[in-house]
Length: 381
Image: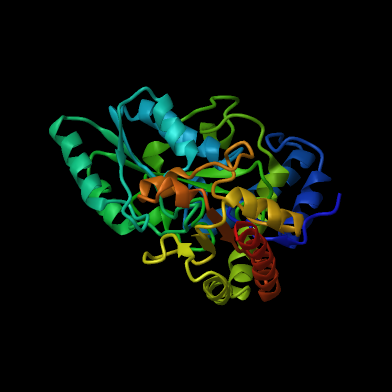
């Protein structure tokens, strides 16, 4: 089966970097268990620990703060479910724009969950968060605040300095979903307020099936899978050494390749082209600070189901929002939280660019979108 020609869904998964591919296959050819003390095991351990150093460097963490997991979703669940248990948390405070992994993990704790709203631009309502933290203080509660640094659907950058100032110096705990920040924003986990932070490999050109939870030393006892004592006892199970090594290789190379792609110019080209084709297009989060590789937009006359089908037939891959919805084209809870009408939300498309995106890709998308839009307009005439 031939692959679609144009891939513009990097926020779902970014293509495997050549450096990560090379390291992955080299490590896959090594036999053994990284916990074994013989020569075969030591080779795998060395590859894995090199990966740990590289991931730590990209995240601004110390190497012993990196705990490898099977995914960001697992890291999120460990932070929220095991963290609430370990820290004797009595309330979760999260936001209406979180990834479903955060929402479902919060609900599964069985604790009261306070949900902070988003403004019309998709930015966390900091005043609401301040009130929720103050209410927890007044009630004698310990809260775990779980927030995302960059929204995966809109690319809106959240006010982490304000969030950190509210939570960091208090008795409460702060967990950050930094999946969409890694490699695109400077992360300084070791020197910053969050107690825990989740990151993912396949968003930066590593494979799916590998993520990490960054943990400060006081969170070392936050454990979800006891297992056999791997990851310094913080996550059991034989480590996926080859995937960890590839994660490290991607971490070492992603930022440079991402910068060389000149994403800002490509997004400007994309948004300018959209405006020319459809002056009534709405770009969500346009007035807020955005990470710079995502354009989430709607043309009111064209539903996302029709647009995605038409683009897919032309070999162009985009999405309607989060990819973690069992393949469904559904209505976005993020846009709902921003006050977007259901009718307009049903027209939302997310175009996300990455390390191998080109001006040719953007031109192909605009040409394809014009074809789909023209067809839709002729049908409605």
